[in-house]
Image (cartoon, rainbow, N blue to C red; front, side, top):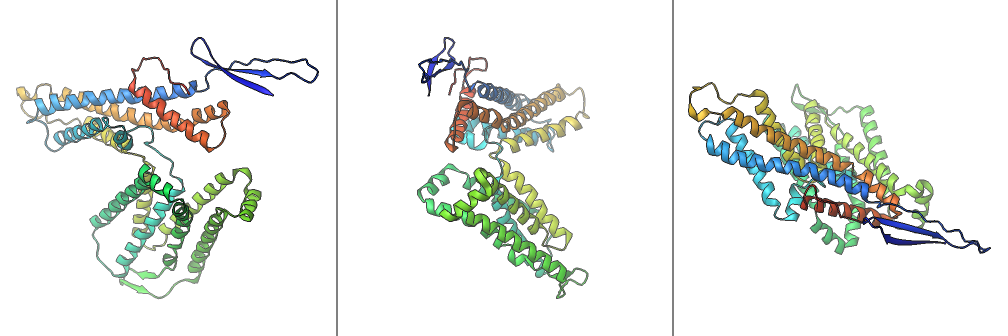
Length: 425
């Protein structure tokens, strides 16, 4: 029998005292093990991410002040109306939105927070993309069969509209309000979770049969090769059977649970998710190859690749940082600030250095935000290390450590950069 007792060390460090119970012969062997705070590595990691984000915030404040006071206030008439004026205005409005959202933690976490800026795609995101890929595929089939002359710009508009719809549905399904609603209706939530992958695969069925389209004569031909048709139907039925078996394995029946435990072992949840993700990826490939014309296939493939990126964004932090980097690099590389006019014009004095300073600050801000978001992805390493060193078990441990990580990041963002770290588990 091992007794554990928590004691407070003089330096505020938690220690664990382990005492072995006496043996049967009365010769008790006591052992004391001193262990440092298990959350210390995670605190150091979170503090590093917070420092990078706070330096980016400082550059953002300087860039906002510089743009409003120096550029738009001092050079409003000589800024190039084609690029510099609108670039500076766009960045000012972007920074104003970020600074305004900081007054509300919920808004800031929803739009510009580093933690959660990137999230794992998972089978939920893949199911959403498969559903909307089927819808896009049906639209293209209708356009093809009705011989509608669609301009190139309309194709881009369709793709952008589908991407906006994908982002909206993804954010809605991951929102806390929807989770509260679904928590009150667990049966409906579970039924939707079970049937969504199966329904997404079933929607592929009308697209499996592929008609030969003669683009030279602008008409459909009735000839369909048996080899291609049989191969596509075989692939569809294998995919449907795999998703059906995975859906059945998730049903809470005693016999099914025993069979799944024997087949997949203790890591059944991991293997089930992996196989379901592979099935959804196969469904995406099948959806992208239903069209014979290369142009339609490129349209679906472009949407799918863009949708994967969009669904991976948890908020606007990465897209906003990308906009800052692109706009600043465009002007710093070209470096044409309209200096070809009269050099003795006092209105152009120090215009080029002012713009250089502004774009360098914006570029540094965007790069720091991207680095902070990339580092936050690797926070899973110290989090899992804390779970292992702390001896935690179960899903509640993962959720608790995630909650503590968010709490520690909030505290680091609120305190001074050089303030001592007093956050403990």
